[in-house]
Image 1 (tube, rainbow, N blue to C red):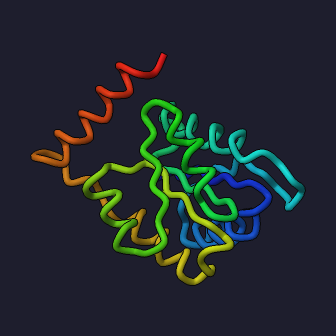
Image 2 (cartoon, rainbow, N blue to C red):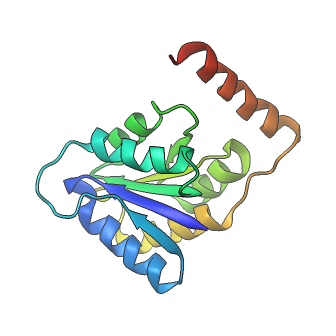
Length: 150
């Protein structure tokens, strides 16, 4: 598994902790920035991470900002991305199992690093429950993207 990580200045510290944790656990990571707390625009980094996932370069993504909201909105503009903002492990697991989420977004100013790492674990360990109602619903999202995205 290869995971892309991205952040803006408001999520830099949390992304750094997650990157250290994942690499310490032998998970292959691609860090697409930002690389400091200097102010940047979160859509630029959300798109970098999203493109790494939709291209197949990475299997999943994790993007951090102050709240997780902005990066989630931006990433979800990329066709094929299903980014989920999660503040708890149950939501992270359900995002993968029921919605086939391929990007997790987190807010550095909302949750602490201990909880964030638990959420990351839940997200990465879960898998999509293919078939049945969940597959049908994700397929409807993909069809919606085809009809509405240029």
